[in-house]
Length: 199
Image (cartoon, rainbow, N blue to C red; front, side, top):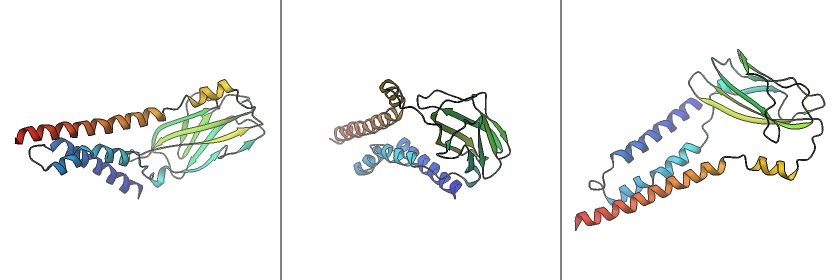
């Protein structure tokens, strides 16, 4: 099911791009060309809609578990997937609330199990586990969860500001808005050229 939906989305994206490339302002009605000019907005909407991951890359269990409250710091993170990972391209990061990494070395893959060593004697803190694996059809599964060790102290105002400024979400949406504005400007310019051509 995930593979089918992913293929359909990719095909729709290719068709939208082909429409933009082949459209000519002198050969098609204005209404159709305007629709093509706004196609980037549709393409962005399709691109950001999450496509369900293929079943064989779904996470089956994890240790520490999702939202686990631990009294003793773990020495590693173990991720168990529903099926064997045939492509060992795995990324696992574990960070505290200040985005400091607490991993040691690279993750290892053994069939359907991914193991990521951690630093010894982790302090009381909320830790985030982020992982990315690739299925045999090239589909990437990216996800994250948190677990807590002990009773973490409250973050200072400086640390909270640093964490909040670390997000790149606004860059993404800013780029999307710019892309849409370029499409609108292109439509206005083309319509102006069309009017001059037919006079």
